[in-house]
Image 1 (tube, rainbow, N blue to C red):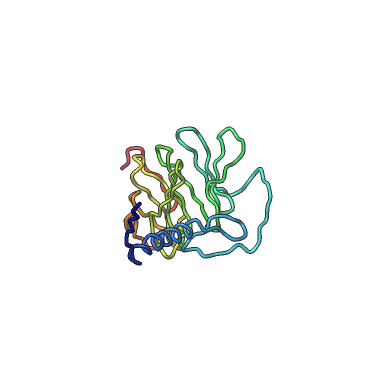
Image 2: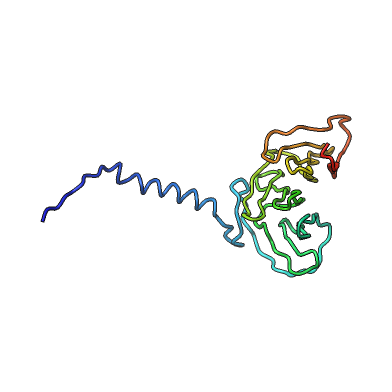
Length: 202
């Protein structure tokens, strides 16, 4: 019987484990959870829960909400998380968690995605979530100011948002990100909120 041996260099032996270690580390960080609540953590929002309070409620006030154009599901924000609930009532389902403040949800015209405001990047910005996969992506990348309201264009390609500090201004963005454009610049003291597109998309 003959035995054949194949030579391996230390580089070839170490490449796969090192590569696996890097991939594992990246994957582990992306799935990192808050030590107390077990909820999602965000890379640019390194907060830790101090304590947990559990309660049940059947009502809320000052909620920002929207209605899905397809199945009439209601989406709303409460205490920094987003929830959906059937239009005819029932149990609410939480679709975001963690220490980020998620607010101002708005359904896309096809009802398959939502745009919402969140400070998960360290400051208020616009994010989009695919409701089927729950994947999120960041649209704006502001480092100051807040997002007060968001609306989709009828064709589902653009978002208009009222954002800024004291004197909020309207900004237009493509859904696939970009620097966007400010729609109203003067007078500087003018405050603009709650934008809505016309049905003809113009």
